[in-house]
Image (tube, rainbow, N blue to C red; front, side):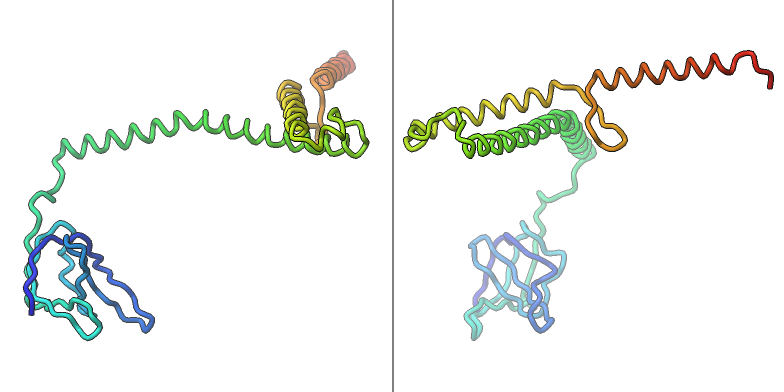
Length: 211
């Protein structure tokens, strides 16, 4: 057998399940070599950073097989519990990170809605461009469309249409009626005035009557 001394770089105490339902255990040392423990688990107290000493031998499959009876573990003293001050500092950092996330969320949401809105405007522009092309009235000539300059001109037209769609959608106030149809600002105001007038008339009708 060969004696190995070094620092554990990685160890999963849960091991690795096999197809037959068993569990294989191994750990990686600071020499980048994996050492197998077979179906026997090393002590669960072992963790990355510990210094270990053990005997091993190459098994029939070429793995470095650890003799667990020889395994000795020296805990890493630097892996101590955090002081109250360190915990408090970590808690403040987490709080600040969460606060920053929520502060920036509104801006991210607005940016996302703008992108979604512009994507819709671009789809409308593409649809209109297709209709104009089919009707033979697209503002770029058929001859120019066959050239590279035609592609640039076509893109310019489409993006100009998309910009116009986007501006109109975002500057034209509207509400939805009960059926989901769009109402202009004038229609909304007119409906409000009509409702106020009807209420005033009802009030006049009720006056002079005893209960």
